[in-house]
Amino acid sequence: MKPCRLFRPGILKAAGTAALVLALTACSVSLFPEKQPQRQFSLPYHFQADSSSPLAQGGVPVLRIDRPRASGLIGSKRIVLETRPNELAAYGSVRWVTEAPELLRDHLLRALREDPRIGTVVSDDSGAASQITLNSSMLEFQEDRAGDPRRVRLFLQAQLVENGSRAVLATRDFRINIPLQSDVTGGSIEDAVTAFGRAADRLSAEVADWVAGVLENY
Image 1: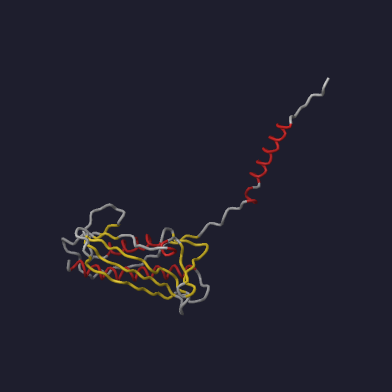
Image 2: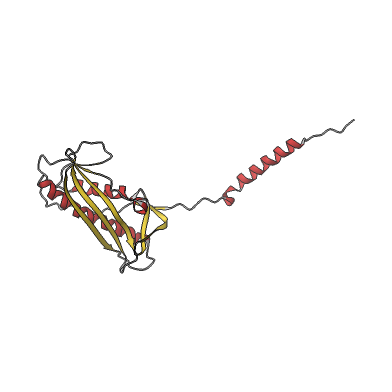
């Protein structure tokens, strides 16, 4: 009588495969370690509207603020550096919480809503009716390490457009330069983020003055 075969080759192969899968699962943490979580930053907001400014009168048109157009690194979540003239890079392990154009739009939206000279302000994704649109192109939004001292540069080309006729009511270029408070090569990301926020605050103040003047004569 032939001896009884307890294991067939196919069964042994399947068992070996299962054991290997279990072993890989057990040690997956060491074989494939998770990436360190990235730090994410919001854009600091410290804008203060001039409370002595006159209140907007009745009949002021509703203003819509569109998300600024931007491309490449400037239009991404990356916190951008200019390491040499016209050469852009980015911080490796940090990000904005959302894309930079959206951050700036929301900053402007909040600031202009707080300005008593300006009436109702809505965003482009609200679907609300409006009479005038602020649209823009964001050409610079970066920490400049190529110059001395280190600074944040913000360059926005803006225009106010009448929605019905599509007529351009006014255009203006805004250039903001804010030195970093801690001007040390290799300084902290916190210093840079603070300067980005101050640049956005100053931009908001200049845009608010400009928009209020245009709406007053509309």
